[in-house]
Picture 1 (cartoon, rainbow, N blue to C red):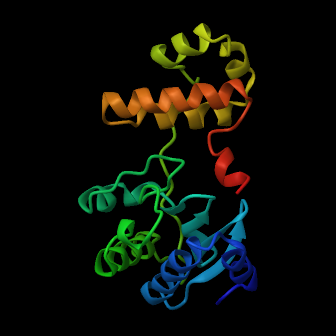
Picture 2: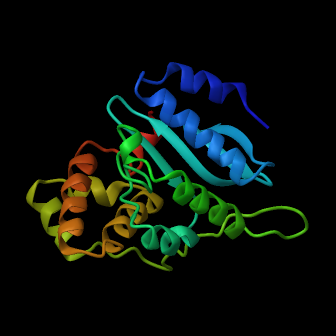
Length: 202
């Protein structure tokens, strides 16, 4: 089922982004003929049984394509991709050369729809595990926030906002990635922004 709002989104995207968004959309429908379309948080989402499976977004200089749910971490890593948050699951895509080959992307899409599960004819998202209890601010993040005078602003954020930042940082597998994420996070926190503010305002 195609949503006319997605047509409008693609039409209103920057010129370079239109063909990329159209291609991802067609592959999503090819991967799962029963896919549903909608707009969530200002960007197109592809659903199965009412549950989000993947999304796409266009920005001024790049596109982002992502998969919903923790179950895709392994398949993405095997394909050479790692979700870095703001750029989605495939990195910052500015042209066809930065997109995975059709065979690879179609395989990832099929896996994403399969991982959504099938119970009673309804597909569901594989939920990401969330830490329980009190949210502990990593020492390195706390040190930088304290240094720039933004620690109080971070502590004043809602638990869910703080949790998103903490999870994003601690999930980094490399020290360089962690440092980069902290650098981006403190700037956004100082401005009072949520971790996914780019997607919410796209």
